Length: 236
View 1: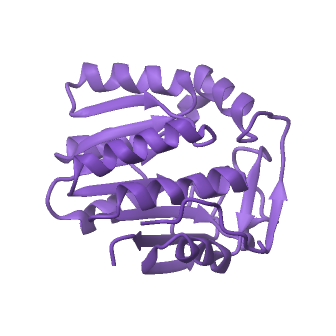
View 2: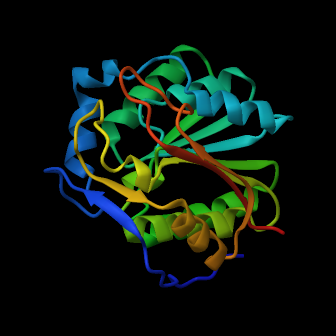
């Protein structure tokens, strides 16, 4: 199980901040984004990372999409036969995801969840631990959207939920993407060297099962970010 306190690690990273505020640094930006017509600019089809993950899952599992956003990946996973729990702090995103799941009668539920609230993290970790395997935690473009304390909460959640079985699948922008132009502007992002993320996972008791970083993994319009795909276990 991951340790209960936040380990200290020297992060070699570049940070860009936008005008949004709040504990996660993204509250105002994403709440406004999902409540507006801007959400329609996000593709409706599943991400390449979702398809890549699904090909490795095998049997149906409970898949927890942390930072589900428009829920395009979560809803697609549900259509593939997985039970899905989508989590996001932005209430407009959750409301719209719930309506989509109900309309299509999908095995997906969605809940407002805040990684910056320790009581919510502990409650969710205990709940997922009780659920038991098979369990998958999934976070696409989540890690670089979190401030340091949110990222530590993510590792804590993974350590609680995955102590028996299961994997954490992540895709995130690396430090090599810091100077590149971005399709959705320059709101808050925390660009981290992959070695820093790996070190944090290991300090919290995780073990790296798979790691690959490159361009060409998450292209969108004129953007081809340098990203890392990381799969971790907490039960080795």
